[in-house]
Length: 125
View 1 (cartoon, rainbow, N blue to C red):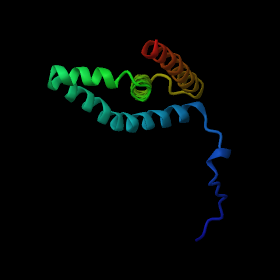
View 2: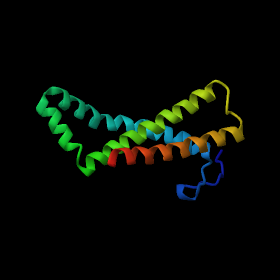
View 3: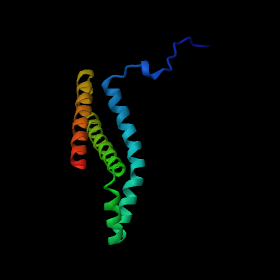
View 4: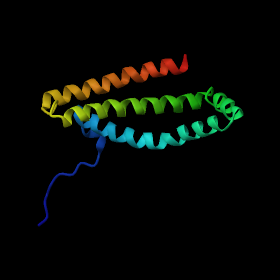
């Protein structure tokens, strides 16, 4: 039996609700943190290898690209932590209703944006 259902493959026309965006962002930031570990582990390994390695990492971290990568890593970690806390609270039975779930998702995203801006200010100034 063939089902005649409409198929919309253009994702730009779909309006996701805030809880869906929060959940998708939590998954995306988890994957991004995995790839950011390459930068973090490299910096950690080189900086702990010797005094010269530490100076090399300090020098590299003064470039714009390295600061941007560090900012991205920090913001990804911040959102994943906020989203994880939100999911833990939901696992305890809170914020499961439509209205409270939407409110918690919006608060999580707004708080993440504020913290990302503050992290950028802290990192670049």
